[in-house]
Length: 493
Ligand code: GLN
Image (cartoon, rainbow, N blue to C red):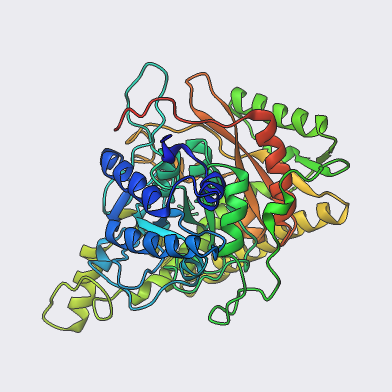
Protein backbone atom coordinates (compact mmCIF):
# COMPACT_ATOMS: atom_id res chain seq x y z
CA UNK A 1 0.00 0.00 0.00
CA UNK A 2 1.17 3.55 -0.67
CA UNK A 3 2.22 5.64 2.32
CA UNK A 4 -1.13 6.85 3.62
CA UNK A 5 0.46 9.72 5.52
CA UNK A 6 1.47 11.38 2.24
CA UNK A 7 -2.18 11.94 1.32
CA UNK A 8 -3.90 15.25 1.83
CA UNK A 9 -7.03 15.39 3.99
CA UNK A 10 -9.40 15.53 1.04
CA UNK A 11 -7.48 12.79 -0.84
CA UNK A 12 -7.74 10.57 2.25
CA UNK A 13 -11.47 11.36 2.50
CA UNK A 14 -11.98 10.32 -1.12
CA UNK A 15 -9.79 7.21 -0.66
CA UNK A 16 -11.87 6.09 2.33
CA UNK A 17 -15.10 6.54 0.41
CA UNK A 18 -13.67 4.57 -2.53
CA UNK A 19 -12.72 1.82 -0.02
CA UNK A 20 -9.03 1.94 -1.01
CA UNK A 21 -8.17 1.58 2.71
CA UNK A 22 -10.04 1.63 6.00
CA UNK A 23 -10.21 4.30 8.68
CA UNK A 24 -8.46 1.90 11.03
CA UNK A 25 -5.57 1.43 8.57
CA UNK A 26 -5.34 5.19 8.17
CA UNK A 27 -5.36 5.77 11.94
CA UNK A 28 -2.68 3.09 12.45
CA UNK A 29 -0.43 4.65 9.81
CA UNK A 30 -0.73 8.00 11.57
CA UNK A 31 -0.23 6.58 15.06
CA UNK A 32 3.04 4.98 13.88
CA UNK A 33 4.15 8.23 12.22
CA UNK A 34 3.38 10.20 15.40
CA UNK A 35 5.48 7.78 17.47
CA UNK A 36 8.37 7.98 15.02
CA UNK A 37 8.34 11.79 15.13
CA UNK A 38 8.55 12.30 18.90
CA UNK A 39 11.85 14.14 18.39
CA UNK A 40 9.88 17.06 16.89
CA UNK A 41 7.95 17.51 20.17
CA UNK A 42 4.82 18.45 18.20
CA UNK A 43 2.43 16.41 20.36
CA UNK A 44 2.18 17.03 24.10
CA UNK A 45 -0.27 14.14 24.49
CA UNK A 46 -0.87 11.18 22.18
CA UNK A 47 -4.30 9.54 22.28
CA UNK A 48 -3.93 6.41 20.11
CA UNK A 49 -6.68 4.39 21.88
CA UNK A 50 -9.07 7.24 21.37
CA UNK A 51 -8.11 7.40 17.68
CA UNK A 52 -8.60 3.68 17.15
CA UNK A 53 -12.02 3.74 18.82
CA UNK A 54 -13.18 6.62 16.65
CA UNK A 55 -11.70 4.96 13.54
CA UNK A 56 -13.59 1.72 14.26
CA UNK A 57 -16.82 3.70 14.52
CA UNK A 58 -15.95 5.45 11.24
CA UNK A 59 -15.38 2.11 9.51
CA UNK A 60 -18.91 1.08 10.51
CA UNK A 61 -20.35 4.30 9.11
CA UNK A 62 -18.32 3.93 5.90
CA UNK A 63 -19.45 0.33 5.47
CA UNK A 64 -23.08 1.46 5.74
CA UNK A 65 -22.50 4.24 3.23
CA UNK A 66 -23.24 6.83 5.92
CA UNK A 67 -19.95 8.72 5.86
CA UNK A 68 -20.05 12.16 7.51
CA UNK A 69 -17.99 15.05 6.03
CA UNK A 70 -14.71 14.23 7.86
CA UNK A 71 -15.36 10.54 8.42
CA UNK A 72 -12.29 8.66 9.67
CA UNK A 73 -9.80 11.50 9.13
CA UNK A 74 -7.05 11.73 11.81
CA UNK A 75 -6.45 15.24 13.16
CA UNK A 76 -4.20 16.90 15.72
CA UNK A 77 -5.79 19.30 18.23
CA UNK A 78 -4.00 22.35 19.60
CA UNK A 79 -3.80 22.06 23.38
CA UNK A 80 -5.85 25.26 23.71
CA UNK A 81 -9.08 23.42 22.86
CA UNK A 82 -10.80 21.74 25.80
CA UNK A 83 -11.27 18.05 25.09
CA UNK A 84 -13.61 16.13 27.37
CA UNK A 85 -11.78 13.57 29.49
CA UNK A 86 -8.46 14.39 27.74
CA UNK A 87 -5.82 16.55 29.45
CA UNK A 88 -5.85 20.17 28.28
CA UNK A 89 -3.14 22.54 29.51
CA UNK A 90 -2.67 25.46 27.06
CA UNK A 91 0.95 24.29 27.52
CA UNK A 92 1.11 26.09 30.86
CA UNK A 93 2.30 24.63 34.14
CA UNK A 94 -0.56 26.42 35.87
CA UNK A 95 -3.15 24.10 34.34
CA UNK A 96 -1.21 21.09 35.63
CA UNK A 97 -3.08 17.93 34.70
CA UNK A 98 -6.42 19.66 34.11
CA UNK A 99 -8.91 17.28 32.49
CA UNK A 100 -11.97 19.17 31.20
CA UNK A 101 -15.45 17.82 31.82
CA UNK A 102 -16.58 19.42 28.55
CA UNK A 103 -15.64 19.59 24.89
CA UNK A 104 -14.96 22.85 23.01
CA UNK A 105 -17.58 23.64 20.39
CA UNK A 106 -15.04 23.59 17.54
CA UNK A 107 -13.73 20.12 18.41
CA UNK A 108 -17.25 18.83 19.18
CA UNK A 109 -18.21 19.80 15.62
CA UNK A 110 -15.19 17.95 14.20
CA UNK A 111 -16.19 14.77 16.06
CA UNK A 112 -19.83 15.30 15.02
CA UNK A 113 -18.54 15.20 11.43
CA UNK A 114 -16.61 11.97 11.97
CA UNK A 115 -13.01 13.15 12.49
CA UNK A 116 -10.51 11.14 14.57
CA UNK A 117 -8.27 12.62 17.30
CA UNK A 118 -4.59 11.62 17.33
CA UNK A 119 -3.67 13.80 20.30
CA UNK A 120 -3.03 17.28 21.63
CA UNK A 121 -0.52 19.58 19.97
CA UNK A 122 2.13 21.82 21.48
CA UNK A 123 1.77 25.62 21.46
CA UNK A 124 3.24 28.69 23.10
CA UNK A 125 2.01 29.02 26.70
CA UNK A 126 -1.54 30.42 26.54
CA UNK A 127 -0.81 31.08 22.82
CA UNK A 128 1.56 33.92 23.70
CA UNK A 129 4.52 33.76 21.35
CA UNK A 130 5.69 33.45 17.78
CA UNK A 131 8.10 30.52 18.01
CA UNK A 132 6.52 27.90 20.31
CA UNK A 133 9.46 28.43 22.68
CA UNK A 134 7.30 29.66 25.59
CA UNK A 135 5.57 26.26 25.96
CA UNK A 136 5.92 24.54 29.34
CA UNK A 137 6.53 21.37 27.27
CA UNK A 138 9.52 22.87 25.48
CA UNK A 139 10.16 23.99 21.93
CA UNK A 140 8.79 22.31 18.81
CA UNK A 141 11.25 21.51 16.03
CA UNK A 142 10.34 22.62 12.50
CA UNK A 143 10.51 19.65 10.08
CA UNK A 144 12.15 22.04 7.60
CA UNK A 145 15.91 22.60 7.76
CA UNK A 146 18.21 24.98 5.93
CA UNK A 147 20.12 23.52 2.97
CA UNK A 148 23.19 21.66 4.21
CA UNK A 149 22.47 22.37 7.87
CA UNK A 150 20.97 20.36 10.69
CA UNK A 151 20.38 23.40 12.93
CA UNK A 152 16.99 23.16 14.63
CA UNK A 153 14.54 25.83 13.53
CA UNK A 154 11.33 27.02 15.15
CA UNK A 155 8.01 26.22 13.42
CA UNK A 156 6.62 29.63 14.41
CA UNK A 157 3.91 30.13 16.98
CA UNK A 158 1.80 30.04 18.82
CA UNK A 159 0.34 27.12 16.82
CA UNK A 160 3.82 25.62 16.31
CA UNK A 161 2.79 22.06 17.11
CA UNK A 162 -0.11 22.27 14.68
CA UNK A 163 2.02 23.59 11.80
CA UNK A 164 4.93 21.21 12.43
CA UNK A 165 2.58 18.22 12.67
CA UNK A 166 0.89 19.03 9.36
CA UNK A 167 4.24 19.65 7.62
CA UNK A 168 5.70 16.42 9.03
CA UNK A 169 2.66 14.37 7.94
CA UNK A 170 1.85 13.33 11.51
CA UNK A 171 -1.78 14.41 11.16
CA UNK A 172 -3.92 15.14 8.11
CA UNK A 173 -4.79 18.62 9.41
CA UNK A 174 -4.85 20.41 12.74
CA UNK A 175 -6.88 22.91 14.70
CA UNK A 176 -5.17 26.16 15.62
CA UNK A 177 -6.00 29.59 17.02
CA UNK A 178 -4.94 33.07 15.97
CA UNK A 179 -4.95 36.19 18.15
CA UNK A 180 -2.28 38.15 16.30
CA UNK A 181 -0.91 35.73 13.72
CA UNK A 182 -0.69 32.34 15.40
CA UNK A 183 -2.26 30.42 12.52
CA UNK A 184 -0.75 32.32 9.60
CA UNK A 185 2.84 32.81 10.79
CA UNK A 186 3.49 29.12 11.68
CA UNK A 187 1.78 28.08 8.42
CA UNK A 188 4.20 30.34 6.52
CA UNK A 189 7.20 28.92 8.42
CA UNK A 190 6.30 25.31 7.56
CA UNK A 191 5.00 25.40 3.98
CA UNK A 192 1.42 24.73 5.13
CA UNK A 193 -1.84 26.62 4.64
CA UNK A 194 -3.58 28.38 7.53
CA UNK A 195 -6.72 30.48 7.66
CA UNK A 196 -7.89 32.77 10.45
CA UNK A 197 -11.58 33.23 9.78
CA UNK A 198 -13.58 36.40 10.45
CA UNK A 199 -14.03 37.14 14.15
CA UNK A 200 -17.27 35.41 15.14
CA UNK A 201 -17.12 32.71 12.45
CA UNK A 202 -16.00 29.95 14.88
CA UNK A 203 -17.22 29.62 18.42
CA UNK A 204 -14.67 30.44 21.11
CA UNK A 205 -16.54 28.32 23.67
CA UNK A 206 -14.24 25.85 25.36
CA UNK A 207 -11.09 27.35 23.87
CA UNK A 208 -8.66 28.67 26.48
CA UNK A 209 -8.97 32.47 26.26
CA UNK A 210 -5.99 34.72 25.55
CA UNK A 211 -7.47 38.02 24.25
CA UNK A 212 -11.18 37.45 23.76
CA UNK A 213 -11.83 40.26 21.27
CA UNK A 214 -9.06 38.97 18.97
CA UNK A 215 -9.02 35.16 19.41
CA UNK A 216 -10.33 33.01 16.55
CA UNK A 217 -9.99 29.33 15.81
CA UNK A 218 -9.09 28.07 12.36
CA UNK A 219 -7.42 25.17 10.59
CA UNK A 220 -3.86 24.49 9.42
CA UNK A 221 -3.77 22.04 6.52
CA UNK A 222 -1.62 20.71 3.71
CA UNK A 223 -3.63 22.45 0.99
CA UNK A 224 -6.14 25.25 0.52
CA UNK A 225 -8.84 22.67 -0.22
CA UNK A 226 -8.08 20.82 3.02
CA UNK A 227 -8.48 24.05 4.98
CA UNK A 228 -11.81 24.70 3.25
CA UNK A 229 -13.08 21.24 4.27
CA UNK A 230 -11.89 21.73 7.85
CA UNK A 231 -13.35 25.21 8.25
CA UNK A 232 -16.77 24.07 7.09
CA UNK A 233 -16.92 21.76 10.10
CA UNK A 234 -15.26 24.14 12.58
CA UNK A 235 -17.39 27.21 11.78
CA UNK A 236 -20.95 27.97 12.79
CA UNK A 237 -23.17 29.75 15.24
CA UNK A 238 -23.03 28.71 18.87
CA UNK A 239 -25.45 30.09 21.46
CA UNK A 240 -22.77 29.45 24.09
CA UNK A 241 -20.55 32.17 22.55
CA UNK A 242 -22.41 35.46 22.21
CA UNK A 243 -19.75 36.76 19.79
CA UNK A 244 -20.31 33.89 17.37
CA UNK A 245 -22.38 34.99 14.42
CA UNK A 246 -25.62 33.41 13.29
CA UNK A 247 -24.89 33.06 9.59
CA UNK A 248 -25.05 29.98 7.40
CA UNK A 249 -21.72 28.25 6.80
CA UNK A 250 -21.08 28.04 3.06
CA UNK A 251 -19.65 25.02 1.28
CA UNK A 252 -16.14 26.49 1.26
CA UNK A 253 -14.77 23.75 -0.98
CA UNK A 254 -17.05 24.96 -3.78
CA UNK A 255 -14.90 28.12 -3.89
CA UNK A 256 -11.81 26.11 -4.89
CA UNK A 257 -11.14 26.51 -8.59
CA UNK A 258 -13.69 29.32 -8.99
CA UNK A 259 -12.46 31.95 -11.46
CA UNK A 260 -10.80 35.02 -9.96
CA UNK A 261 -11.19 36.97 -13.19
CA UNK A 262 -12.00 40.60 -12.59
CA UNK A 263 -11.36 40.46 -8.85
CA UNK A 264 -9.69 43.58 -7.49
CA UNK A 265 -6.63 42.87 -5.36
CA UNK A 266 -5.27 45.65 -3.18
CA UNK A 267 -1.53 46.00 -2.61
CA UNK A 268 -1.03 48.16 0.49
CA UNK A 269 2.00 50.39 0.17
CA UNK A 270 2.44 50.57 3.96
CA UNK A 271 3.39 46.87 4.03
CA UNK A 272 6.49 47.66 2.00
CA UNK A 273 8.20 48.28 5.33
CA UNK A 274 11.67 49.70 5.63
CA UNK A 275 14.33 47.03 5.34
CA UNK A 276 11.89 44.44 3.94
CA UNK A 277 13.80 41.27 3.10
CA UNK A 278 14.51 41.29 -0.67
CA UNK A 279 13.42 37.67 -1.15
CA UNK A 280 10.08 38.38 0.49
CA UNK A 281 9.61 41.48 -1.61
CA UNK A 282 10.35 39.43 -4.75
CA UNK A 283 7.90 36.74 -3.68
CA UNK A 284 5.20 39.36 -3.09
CA UNK A 285 5.79 40.59 -6.66
CA UNK A 286 5.50 37.01 -7.92
CA UNK A 287 2.18 36.67 -6.10
CA UNK A 288 0.98 39.87 -7.80
CA UNK A 289 2.03 38.49 -11.19
CA UNK A 290 0.31 35.13 -10.59
CA UNK A 291 -2.99 36.75 -9.62
CA UNK A 292 -2.79 39.16 -12.55
CA UNK A 293 -2.11 36.26 -14.92
CA UNK A 294 -5.21 34.52 -13.55
CA UNK A 295 -7.30 37.56 -14.47
CA UNK A 296 -7.30 39.67 -11.31
CA UNK A 297 -6.86 43.41 -11.39
CA UNK A 298 -4.06 44.76 -9.18
CA UNK A 299 -4.66 48.06 -7.40
CA UNK A 300 -2.24 50.00 -5.23
CA UNK A 301 -3.99 50.91 -1.96
CA UNK A 302 -3.21 52.71 1.27
CA UNK A 303 -3.90 51.48 4.80
CA UNK A 304 -2.47 54.52 6.58
CA UNK A 305 -2.74 53.32 10.20
CA UNK A 306 -0.83 50.08 9.63
CA UNK A 307 2.24 51.24 11.51
CA UNK A 308 0.26 51.64 14.75
CA UNK A 309 -1.20 48.14 14.63
CA UNK A 310 1.61 46.27 16.36
CA UNK A 311 2.06 48.70 19.29
CA UNK A 312 -1.73 48.91 19.73
CA UNK A 313 -2.02 45.11 19.64
CA UNK A 314 0.61 44.83 22.37
CA UNK A 315 -1.64 46.96 24.58
CA UNK A 316 -5.03 45.43 23.76
CA UNK A 317 -3.90 41.77 23.82
CA UNK A 318 -2.04 41.94 27.18
CA UNK A 319 -4.90 43.99 28.72
CA UNK A 320 -7.42 41.28 27.85
CA UNK A 321 -4.98 38.54 28.82
CA UNK A 322 -4.41 40.04 32.27
CA UNK A 323 -8.15 39.91 32.85
CA UNK A 324 -8.68 36.44 31.35
CA UNK A 325 -5.79 34.92 33.27
CA UNK A 326 -7.03 36.21 36.63
CA UNK A 327 -9.02 32.98 36.95
CA UNK A 328 -5.85 30.88 37.42
CA UNK A 329 -5.57 31.28 41.16
CA UNK A 330 -4.91 27.78 42.41
CA UNK A 331 -8.53 27.33 43.48
CA UNK A 332 -10.38 26.22 40.38
CA UNK A 333 -7.91 24.49 38.07
CA UNK A 334 -4.62 22.70 37.95
CA UNK A 335 -1.64 23.74 40.01
CA UNK A 336 -1.90 24.90 43.63
CA UNK A 337 1.17 26.02 45.60
CA UNK A 338 0.24 26.05 49.31
CA UNK A 339 0.71 29.23 51.37
CA UNK A 340 0.04 30.38 54.93
CA UNK A 341 -3.18 32.10 53.84
CA UNK A 342 -5.25 32.44 50.69
CA UNK A 343 -3.37 35.49 49.39
CA UNK A 344 -0.02 33.76 49.72
CA UNK A 345 -1.47 30.68 48.05
CA UNK A 346 -2.64 32.81 45.07
CA UNK A 347 0.70 34.53 44.81
CA UNK A 348 2.81 31.40 45.03
CA UNK A 349 0.59 29.51 42.59
CA UNK A 350 0.79 32.28 40.00
CA UNK A 351 4.52 32.80 40.52
CA UNK A 352 5.21 29.10 40.02
CA UNK A 353 2.60 28.34 37.41
CA UNK A 354 3.09 31.06 34.80
CA UNK A 355 6.15 31.27 32.56
CA UNK A 356 8.18 34.47 31.99
CA UNK A 357 6.40 35.65 28.83
CA UNK A 358 2.94 35.16 30.34
CA UNK A 359 4.00 37.11 33.45
CA UNK A 360 5.29 39.90 31.24
CA UNK A 361 1.92 40.11 29.46
CA UNK A 362 -0.02 40.11 32.75
CA UNK A 363 2.15 42.94 34.06
CA UNK A 364 1.84 45.01 30.86
CA UNK A 365 -1.90 44.37 30.77
CA UNK A 366 -2.44 45.29 34.41
CA UNK A 367 -0.39 48.44 33.91
CA UNK A 368 -2.27 49.69 30.84
CA UNK A 369 -5.60 49.08 32.56
CA UNK A 370 -4.66 50.74 35.84
CA UNK A 371 -6.20 54.05 36.79
CA UNK A 372 -4.19 56.97 35.47
CA UNK A 373 -2.85 54.91 32.56
CA UNK A 374 -6.09 53.51 31.19
CA UNK A 375 -6.87 56.59 29.05
CA UNK A 376 -3.31 57.07 27.88
CA UNK A 377 -2.78 53.46 26.80
CA UNK A 378 -5.81 51.21 26.68
CA UNK A 379 -8.37 53.72 25.47
CA UNK A 380 -5.95 55.10 22.91
CA UNK A 381 -5.13 51.65 21.59
CA UNK A 382 -8.87 51.00 21.20
CA UNK A 383 -9.19 54.19 19.15
CA UNK A 384 -6.26 53.14 16.97
CA UNK A 385 -7.99 49.82 16.51
CA UNK A 386 -11.07 51.60 15.15
CA UNK A 387 -8.89 53.53 12.70
CA UNK A 388 -7.23 50.34 11.46
CA UNK A 389 -10.64 48.80 10.91
CA UNK A 390 -11.76 51.92 9.01
CA UNK A 391 -8.70 51.74 6.74
CA UNK A 392 -9.88 48.33 5.56
CA UNK A 393 -13.54 49.36 5.35
CA UNK A 394 -12.65 52.23 3.07
CA UNK A 395 -10.63 50.09 0.63
CA UNK A 396 -13.38 47.47 0.57
CA UNK A 397 -15.92 50.25 -0.08
CA UNK A 398 -13.82 51.17 -3.13
CA UNK A 399 -14.48 47.71 -4.53
CA UNK A 400 -11.33 45.86 -3.43
CA UNK A 401 -12.09 42.14 -3.02
CA UNK A 402 -8.99 41.16 -1.07
CA UNK A 403 -5.59 42.48 -0.02
CA UNK A 404 -2.32 40.69 -0.80
CA UNK A 405 0.71 41.01 1.52
CA UNK A 406 3.64 38.89 2.67
CA UNK A 407 2.71 36.62 5.59
CA UNK A 408 5.88 37.13 7.64
CA UNK A 409 8.94 39.39 7.56
CA UNK A 410 11.34 36.38 7.47
CA UNK A 411 11.50 32.62 7.05
CA UNK A 412 11.84 30.29 10.05
CA UNK A 413 14.67 31.17 12.44
CA UNK A 414 16.75 29.05 14.77
CA UNK A 415 15.60 27.84 18.19
CA UNK A 416 17.00 30.25 20.78
CA UNK A 417 17.92 32.81 18.12
CA UNK A 418 15.35 35.55 18.74
CA UNK A 419 13.76 37.48 21.56
CA UNK A 420 15.87 36.47 24.53
CA UNK A 421 17.50 39.91 24.89
CA UNK A 422 14.61 41.95 23.56
CA UNK A 423 11.04 40.61 23.46
CA UNK A 424 10.12 43.17 20.78
CA UNK A 425 12.34 41.25 18.34
CA UNK A 426 9.88 38.35 18.71
CA UNK A 427 6.81 40.61 18.58
CA UNK A 428 7.96 41.95 15.19
CA UNK A 429 7.11 38.58 13.64
CA UNK A 430 3.48 39.72 13.65
CA UNK A 431 3.79 43.03 11.75
CA UNK A 432 1.89 41.70 8.75
CA UNK A 433 -0.71 39.65 10.63
CA UNK A 434 -1.95 41.67 13.65
CA UNK A 435 -3.86 44.25 11.60
CA UNK A 436 -6.22 41.47 10.51
CA UNK A 437 -7.11 40.52 14.09
CA UNK A 438 -7.45 44.16 15.12
CA UNK A 439 -9.96 44.63 12.27
CA UNK A 440 -11.69 41.26 12.86
CA UNK A 441 -11.15 40.23 9.23
CA UNK A 442 -10.38 36.83 7.67
CA UNK A 443 -6.79 36.14 6.55
CA UNK A 444 -5.18 33.15 4.87
CA UNK A 445 -1.48 32.28 4.57
CA UNK A 446 -0.51 30.22 1.53
CA UNK A 447 2.98 28.87 0.82
CA UNK A 448 4.39 30.57 -2.26
CA UNK A 449 8.06 29.76 -2.53
CA UNK A 450 11.36 28.80 -0.91
CA UNK A 451 14.09 31.22 0.08
CA UNK A 452 17.78 30.80 -0.79
CA UNK A 453 18.23 28.66 2.34
CA UNK A 454 15.51 26.29 1.11
CA UNK A 455 12.93 27.41 3.66
CA UNK A 456 9.27 28.05 2.86
CA UNK A 457 7.79 31.55 2.60
CA UNK A 458 4.13 32.47 2.54
CA UNK A 459 1.83 35.12 1.18
CA UNK A 460 -1.19 36.46 3.03
CA UNK A 461 -4.59 37.35 1.60
CA UNK A 462 -6.95 39.47 3.69
CA UNK A 463 -10.66 39.40 2.89
CA UNK A 464 -13.91 41.21 3.54
CA UNK A 465 -15.79 40.17 6.68
CA UNK A 466 -17.28 36.68 6.25
CA UNK A 467 -15.88 36.35 2.74
CA UNK A 468 -13.61 33.39 3.41
CA UNK A 469 -14.76 31.98 0.06
CA UNK A 470 -12.87 34.63 -1.90
CA UNK A 471 -9.76 33.82 0.15
CA UNK A 472 -10.10 30.15 -0.74
CA UNK A 473 -10.49 30.98 -4.46
CA UNK A 474 -7.50 33.33 -4.46
CA UNK A 475 -5.43 31.11 -2.19
CA UNK A 476 -6.00 28.22 -4.53
CA UNK A 477 -4.93 30.35 -7.50
CA UNK A 478 -1.62 31.03 -5.73
CA UNK A 479 -1.24 27.37 -4.79
CA UNK A 480 -1.91 26.43 -8.40
CA UNK A 481 0.82 28.76 -9.64
CA UNK A 482 3.37 28.12 -6.89
CA UNK A 483 2.86 24.38 -6.39
CA UNK A 484 2.99 22.59 -3.04
CA UNK A 485 6.03 22.63 -0.75
CA UNK A 486 6.71 19.46 1.18
CA UNK A 487 9.64 18.39 3.32
CA UNK A 488 11.77 16.17 1.14
CA UNK A 489 13.47 14.01 3.72
CA UNK A 490 11.87 12.68 6.92
CA UNK A 491 15.12 13.09 8.86
CA UNK A 492 13.34 12.80 12.22
CA UNK A 493 11.86 9.33 11.66
N1 GLN B 1 2.63 36.26 18.46
C1 GLN B 1 1.52 37.01 18.93
C2 GLN B 1 1.56 37.12 20.43
O1 GLN B 1 2.48 36.65 20.99
C3 GLN B 1 0.23 36.38 18.48
C4 GLN B 1 -0.06 35.11 19.18
C5 GLN B 1 -1.36 34.51 18.76
O2 GLN B 1 -1.87 34.82 17.68
N2 GLN B 1 -1.92 33.71 19.63
O3 GLN B 1 0.71 37.68 21.05
